[in-house]
Image 1 (spheres, rainbow, N blue to C red):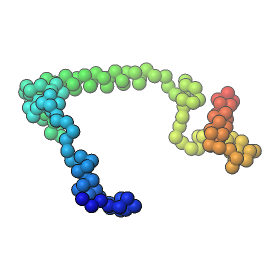
Image 2: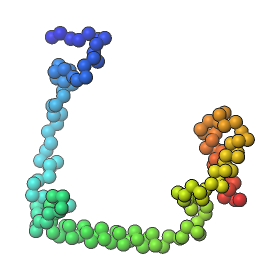
Image 3: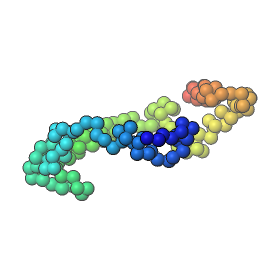
Image 4: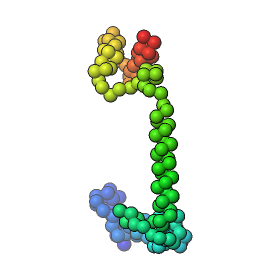
Length: 145
């Protein structure tokens, strides 16, 4: 069987039949057993045959009791998370580094201080790591200030 020259081995945008055959393209390496495939009449939650099946709006099928238990458990989880979030302290009682805001005008004073520090030094000489060290040191000083 003629082979392509080694200098032209990447000139095609697709694999030839011989290359696919050598690589085993499109063949199965192993067979899936019966236990690895969900039966058609199985609930998506308990993986058992349906008892009073209910259909979801996307086509999933569940047992009536399984989906009820799942939704009640999810509702309890949401209530628990809401209670945890309600009991967290407000941002005005937290240190400065927890009170981050996305509004640029609130942090303009910080940017002005950093730019003053950069003006004193030669900005082109600092590496990225050096810039990060400088910014972190300014932030640490501002927490005390």
